[in-house]
Amino acid sequence: MTTIRQLIQTGPAKANELLARLADTSDGALKTRERLLVDLKTELDLLAKLEEEHLFPVLRKHKETKDLVSAALNDNRQIRKLVAELEQTPKESEDFAAKVAELRKVFQQSVRDERNELLPAVLKALSDDEAQAIVENIEAGKAEIEDAKRSELEQRRAEVRDEREQAAQDLADQEEAAAREQRTREVARQTADVVSRNGAIAVENSRKIVESAADGMQRLATAPLSTGSIFWDSMFNLWMAPLGRSVARPANVELSNEQEEVIPLAEETLLVGKRTVESGTTSVRRYLVEAPVEQQVILYDEKVIVERRRPVTDAATGEKLTELTVEMIETSEVPVVGKGVKVREEVVVRRERTRRVETVRDTVRRHEIEIARSDENDRASRKRPRLAHSGR
Image (cartoon, rainbow, N blue to C red; front, side, top):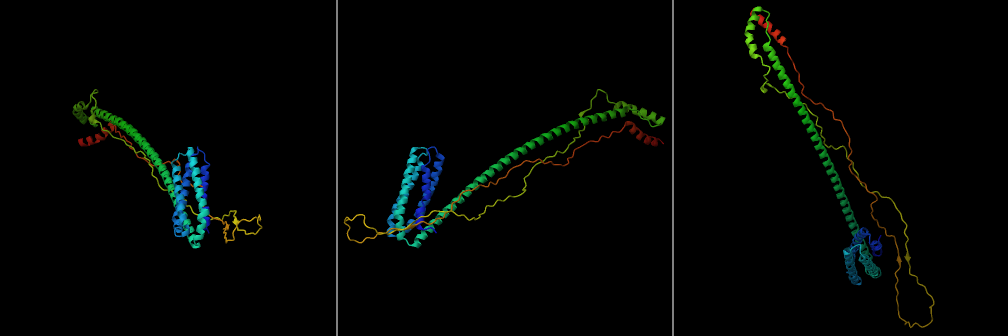
């Protein structure tokens, strides 16, 4: 369990380390100086805040420590002022190193004052319960601040991860939209080509059908009919001769467009699109495990030794016979266990796009034509029996 002595003696260790590292940097290490300065400012603000919230209010209640609080507050104000000046100083200038040295000197003097003056007064004025309550409040404050930092860090990481995923999704959507637009244009072009070819074929077929029909009408109009009877053949030859002459089309007369009939032939084309469906879910859960660890630490104990010896000289020292009391504090170091958090590794969860080709099979329909032609002689033979039957 941490004591008030250990808290005051070991609290500034991290700030001292950051100051030493900042003092060892060169003028060209701009990024390193900026990073160390941010960490140093955070640590100094944390130390001052915990003291001012949990330690100083208790010390103001005791006569022995009340005056020491004002000096400690002045030290904190001076340290904050030097840190602010250090932030405004260019990191590559020579003044930066000089201000770091000044800040380090002031801070170390403040630490010595707390150990030599504040700590003995605290141990003398405060009861064990008061001292332990201060330690518990300060440690709880540290834990709360660390939890807030971790939560903020996790939130920033989550925001960065979401932005990265959103950017990747936007890029994928843009690529898919571009590919879909390209496929749509290709299908439209193919459809236009098919329609154009079908239209040309339909026009050509219609022209041939009209020409064939016109030729058949001409042959039918000019061909003589025969019923098998001389009487009826002679009669119909008389009747049909004028009709044959009127129906016959001169060779130099072209058909009118009004006699054409266009039959369009269409066909279906296969249009293949895409849609996204869920094919599975991958869940990555982070959990805590505990592992036993051990580490050796060297501790020192300071004991007060009282011994008697003969005086170094027998000369009179002029010491008066008065009462004198000398107090010397014995110290003993005990392990202080703290836990720090560092990132061991990162697990990146992302979606990776792979490409595959899949063949889509289906059926399409199209128009075909069936042409049925009848011969003129067949038509004549089908008509002859009816005429002969009528004569009888």
